[in-house]
Amino acid sequence: MDTHAPTTIDRKSSETERQAALKQIYAQVLERQPYEYERKEIVKLERDFLKGKLGVRHFIGELVMSSVYLNSFYRNSSNLKFVEWSFKHLLGRAIQGKEEIALYMDLLMMHGVSAFFHEILGSEEYRKAFGCFTIPYARNVKFYDSPRNYLQTNLLQHEHVGQRGRVIPTIYWQQLGLDCETGTCVMPDENAKFNQQKAHQPVVEPTAKEPVSKALNAEIEELLQMLQNSDAKQVLQSMNENQRSLLRSLAK
Image (cartoon, rainbow, N blue to C red; front, side, top):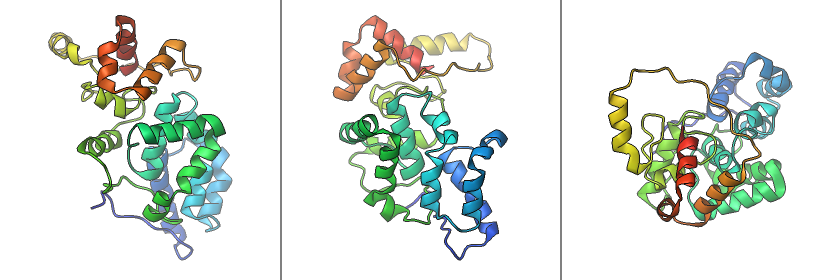
């Protein structure tokens, strides 16, 4: 059973229906409405959609290639996290494991974001789920190969942008057994210490976090490579203290 009833906009839809659909597309793809200064870039795109010149899939294909989307999810994030967010926004689910990660990471790194989005929006899965006129939404798809995959999608759908950082995707936080319920991920061997310290600390408002540079340093790249190529629990056991410290800092 799907989480939300699908919204379909076609040539017969009224301008009022298209205005409502536009807000829904932004909520799904951007996780917010565009800021006023951003609308200057996409004003023609919006106008063509509202006039019925563009279908939903075509509009989304243009939106994700705009600076509005790329500045929000690509340029200040790792490729891994960007791939995960793209699956959330366009397919309504989490990415499903090493094989799918490897496939889309290779596509992104070898051929760029345009080919990456073309593959997703042109996929049989997208066509069957949404076609040309249905707005993507969070789905309870039936082909997850384990309860873990289902839980990963549930975690991802409720994750705010940047809540668990912009580097390592949700799939790895879960596989590593991190506790991320409070919005700050904690290493398994530090849960008790963290909870004890938290009980004695006053409530402090969260501060703005520095974005992670697209040119990730060698240590972060090495850690991401380890997570891609090995079982997450084995990676956790093999980490040295510097790598554990790095992982803790990325989780904040």
